[in-house]
Amino acid sequence: MQKHTLAALTILLIAALSASCAEDDSAQVDAGTDTDTDADADTDADAGTDTDTGFDPDDLPVLTFDAYHTYDEVIGYLEEVAEVAPELVTYEVIGESVEGRALGCLVINATGADDPPAVFINGAHHGDEWPPVEAAIGFVDHALHHLDDPDLAAGLGYFAVYVLPIVNPDGFVAGERENANGVDINRDYAGPTIPVEEAFGQPETQAMKALIDEKGFVAAAALHTSPSSVSVLWPWGYAGDPTADDVAFTSIGAAVAEAMAIDTYLQSNEDYPTEGEFLDYAYDATGALAFTFEVYSPKNPVPSALPDIVGAVADGTTELLQQARAFDEGGAKLAAAAPQRGPGYVIQLGPDGGKLE
Image 1 (cartoon, rainbow, N blue to C red):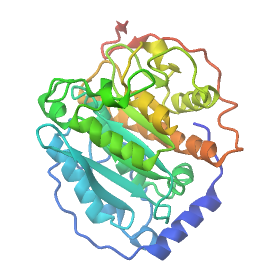
Image 2: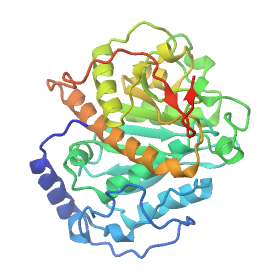
Image 3: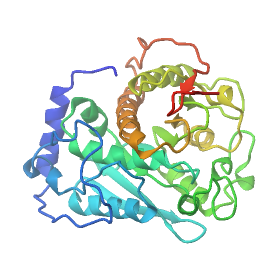
């Protein structure tokens, strides 16, 4: 990952947090997880004390990634984090699923502003793709334990970060790709070829539309897994024509892929053509730099693979925040020095070392 010297920004961020946050000695409440250590090897290094950030990182619910978390455990984790660090974190329910399950979203705002620019991270559009959920909550845990990391400070001092680990709760609980109505909700968005009146037929995508339209995210990443490839993708999915921001997408995609140790980054349509995807709507409707991170192949590896996945997504998201800030501020070079590896597929190895086509 490209590193930046941001010690001054880190000091300003921590100072701002110190001035605005009161000491919170909230006792840890069991969120229903059976976890006890962080998957990221660097998590032992605390972000600071309660006098730095308004909370003590030791009071955060502790995560391990030796098993997949259930829906109830994920929601419990989000709620507890918001209780432990209320000055920095809020828990919001942006809508409900077909079967009435909450679409629970955690908002990390370390900027000191009431309405800062924002970035959106989401997982489990497809309910049978479980590692993205682990990666989403893993990023929350990583961020709150590393607020004094210069690379994270560059992004968290500028953006509010919205993290929605499970877009499709009913499908996630059932282990099904589709929602409870049997709809692939990552094909239910409007786009250049799909008018709004013909899209958003599901409560999950209606809630997503409302959030996207309200916040106008600068950047977004939808986390997925794939049966065949690991990659970083960007619009368009519906057509092979480049977007007006193709240079930015290509350079940011390359930088994020490098941070995640992924060799494949390309326009989504070159992966395979789709219509009605999240990334096309987010970009078309609001100009968000919207990406898909295909974080692992095959879809649901054995749990022993999760720590590496969580760590890679934390690195990639940190890089995305830095790159999105440079884009939003304007004038800064995005990733001009990023290696210009041509788009295309790279052979991936399965857990047994076999090739995946």
